[in-house]
Length: 275
Image 1 (cartoon, rainbow, N blue to C red):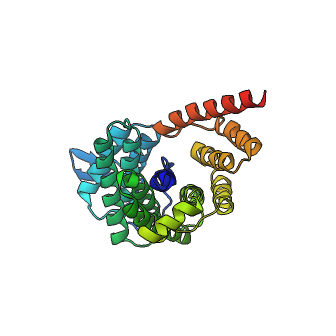
Image 2 (tube, rainbow, N blue to C red; image 1 turned 60 degrees about the horizontal axis):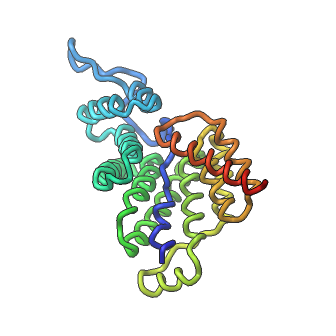
Image 3 (cartoon, rainbow, N blue to C red; image 1 turned 180 degrees about the horizontal axis):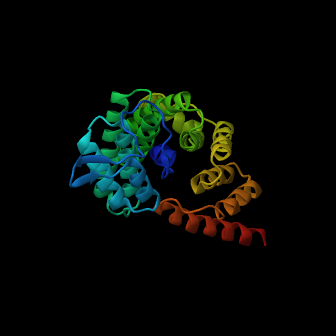
């Protein structure tokens, strides 16, 4: 049941970034610095986001931590910390599984706290789904299936709250692709011994990826994951077109560099196969 054991690892496959969407209510103005006293000024969310999108994760961490220390109920900080911890974990070598897992588990905690404080914070649901997906890599098959169901629930809620969330649609596309790749035999065994597996198809994945790109055409992940779907679907021409588009997009996170290397290798592989 190799596909079954691996399918949840594909669900998130390094989630993409997200700007502040302004969802939910917050008592904090991200554009205003907070003065503690005459000698100390707390940085703003805007400054934290600038550091994050400059891939200066240590600086972003220090700013978000300072803001959370000031107000532990700030949901705009909590979902950003979930996002940040996922991205830090993604940048750690696969050989350091325990270290990666520490960051992923922190991400889950931050995201859960975010939506516990404000259930209507769409970004909290999106990043809970993302962090659950990467955290599940080292879990057993039965727990993977349980987590997969929660991921789908969180993605559905995120999209319900914010239909313009390209991240949620991109992860949803990967989710459908992973589930569609489970064979009928593996599904039968899993349904018998592990509990029912959610449904998903290539067609549903395609719709989700197209929506993600329509909402945000600048993200490398959207094109890369969409291309992988077409490769699985034996639509190589469409896959190559998407891979070439991905090469024109800006690097927005550390993991994008890995994606670009993989994209280059895939293009070369299919170019050689066509000769």
